[in-house]
Image (cartoon, rainbow, N blue to C red; front, side, top):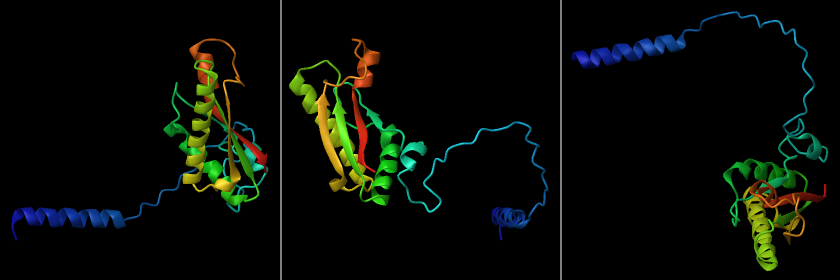
Length: 171
């Protein structure tokens, strides 16, 4: 056996021996002298199934607005986790229904903004279905520029109006 093979074999045996050794260290957790406020659960109930109360208590399900870039109807990657939560809720609660309300900022014609709001609603609809939601539980409505949440004429305001709101019509 050559030296390279011997060194390799010895190294592998050393790693195997060290991996098998268990170091028994007893650690004492530091005493907690601060008081913590009770937190709301961020996961479904203990059975793993969402219930109607989770819409108000679950941090992911409380996020019901999806924002879009200017003149875009593609879903941003940061909203994929939210789509997964809402799709799971739809799977867990077959009687629930969602209205996806598409909106646009004030720029563009009324017809263009209505179409853009619908395309944005359809993008969220597709994402929910891809995550396991049922098409029969989803409805898309476009309001275009008709229902702004901010009425100033600047980019920070317009960005708030480029959105889809997830509205539960049946829980």
